[in-house]
Image (cartoon, rainbow, N blue to C red; front, top):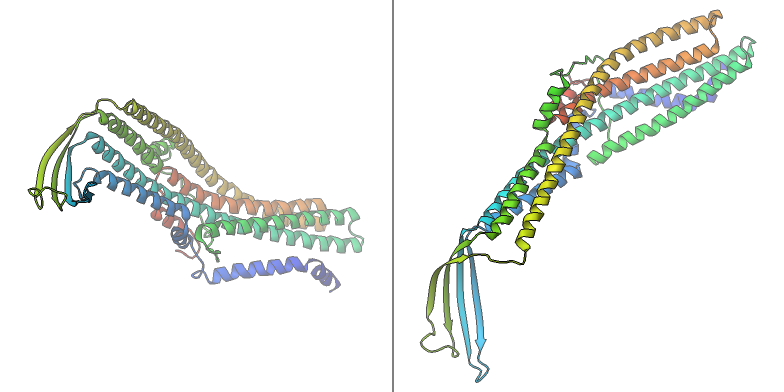
Length: 443
């Protein structure tokens, strides 16, 4: 009884943390239906994410730009009214007129409309890229929080094991069965484990803040991965096949390619300023008042005209606009090339990460089992006098490291698969739902 009291007085803070942690885990398992899953967090993020809202706003801006470019090719109608006064005598007159114009030929405005429509398609593609980016960010935050929770649970378990070893070593020292160095060594490992627990708690707080940043609310309990997780190899297995798929389907690359196409159309629009324009107009005017000749009062004059304009000289502004449009086209081309290289590299990296995570899943599972057996054997060996206190402390530490590595590998494999799909331009609600099916309580 005195030993238990000493353990309680010295480590009651840790026992309280462990009790709260495992009570929370038990509650999450018993109320799995009430816990939030990946799709629930994704829907919350869609409604609150400012980056996705910004992409929607940019699309709206570009759509209105296309509407305005089209309006310049449609009929224009205006009403003019005026009043005149003759200085000598003060006689007054008034006039009322309307003018309707319809561009019949204006290559510059037509090419500008083509460019704006192409840019609208590019912004629609960027909105799709923003949706995929949001799905990836949600997955990173979700599994990042699960990893932080697992790391904290492992750290608390490790601290509890070292605390028990401190109490056990102190009891053996009091009985003359252990040396003072064993007590101090156990206390050292315990103190280090307490620092690891503090760091794990801080990492968990940051992971929760990352989800809150996406959803606008503090996350509740999250569904963890199911215990049985069978990693599947990527299909196709060839990384270059994934690269080819990404270069074709990645929405960011598609948007940049459309920017390049719009750049070519803007060059054509700048050059078309040299071309003649043809406008049909219908003018109607009516005048009245003492200042107007009696024969003209109340008379309506209607004029139908075709106006041909041929630009001759604009001070070099036209050629400068062409060069400016060409520079913008070149910039879009270089941005596209840089993005293609980056996407290819990212796709290969995520493919390799997926293979590495699958391998780690297998090796860390073996490590967890081996560490458990080694710890049991070391405890038995210490009781028989064939293993030292240092051996036991290292065995406890190795088991904690193996458990944490396995938990991290499980989350890393699911996340690597989703990020590979994002690089290939194939990440969406369907793919998130497939990952959601791997969670506990979702089958």
